[in-house]
Image 1: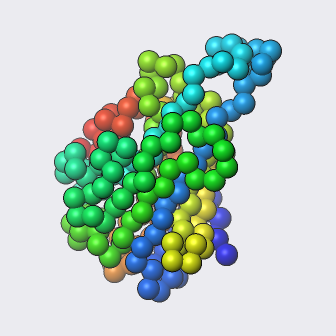
Image 2: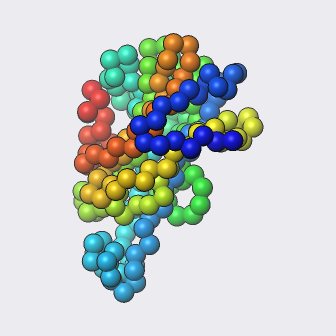
Length: 204
């Protein structure tokens, strides 16, 4: 049975699941349904139901022991779907977030993550947010979950329920080493970084 996490909670991942070496990290979100007649959401988001889709992108930052990204190859996103060592594989971009379930999925082979990588930070940002005048107040039902792909069992689930109005990127959660084990932290903090590049800069 999945453990439902609260913001700031940290839990053992591998210790409680002996033999777990590969996980699937699913991230999901839905666009807020805009009122056709304008109304509250119409006035906030620029009119009726014809607004542009909010294109959210999930990414992983591979951090060293100092919490830094060493280079561009340590950022896994729609433009770089696989880490150099093959331990992380992004399944690709979802442009709208419509529909139930995961919108983007990232597979991590924990046993293959290089020893120099101490933390994996999962980020969701809005593509071209500044130009499109879009923010996470236009997104609802955001979550991250960790699944054991061999049994399809959801191990951890974290719903992001804060008010992210005006925020253009989310630091969703992080996987980090704790001795020989891996732990997961539910972060859920929003930032005003206008692009993934800006998020990466804060870790370099």
